[in-house]
Amino acid sequence: MFCEEESDTAVVSSKGVDERMIDNLQAEPAIRIDSPESFDADMELAIVELSKGLKAISTYMSARKDMASADILAPKAFEADAVPEGQVLFACGSDRRLRPTLIARPCMHQASSEEESLKAVKDCMDTVRQTFDRLPSGEEQIVVLYDLGGAGYSNFDMTFTRQMMEGLLNEFPDRLEAVFVINGHWTISAAWSTIRAFLHPDTREKIVFYGSDYRAKLLDHIGAEHPYLEYLQK
Image (tube, rainbow, N blue to C red):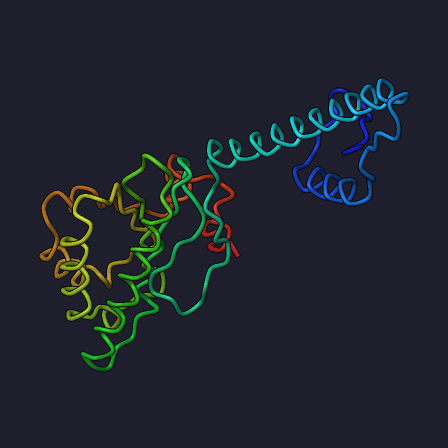
């Protein structure tokens, strides 16, 4: 009455059960008792049909429960595979613990006024908030890949740096697990010395500089298929 059974082990999707239950309920006429003589036969038929209906409902509820459990229990990698050009800070891919990875690209930062610097801070802080909101249950920290490729001294903005550091310390204390700096070069050493002065000693300990072999070392933290690693190889 409610659904057809092909086998006891058939996999039933909740959508399929929903549609078939509704269609059959609308199409199936009600069972009528036409006369006292047909009462026993009608009752037997009613019991058979009721049994089929209860079994269909049980299968439907089991399928819905299994899918809900899968959504709750199975952790999913954060999907943000595209590398947006022009953005200073963005989430991209996941680390080995399925936490979204933050990518920082200072070469994309250009500000000609304090107003532009403060707007950039606001945009970056919004990105950080959204990234922390996407952490899997039980996780509190994230990993940052800080790519210095293409960056020069002109990209290091003191207003932006000071306000960004202040915002992170006030809103997300001790929420960075590590900051892996890649593609560094000697021309930014003076800028780094300035930025370092704004960092808490505990934060400084979490900043790790990698040389040209950064890919092999990053594989301890992110997979080889990480979209930003693939982007860097293009």
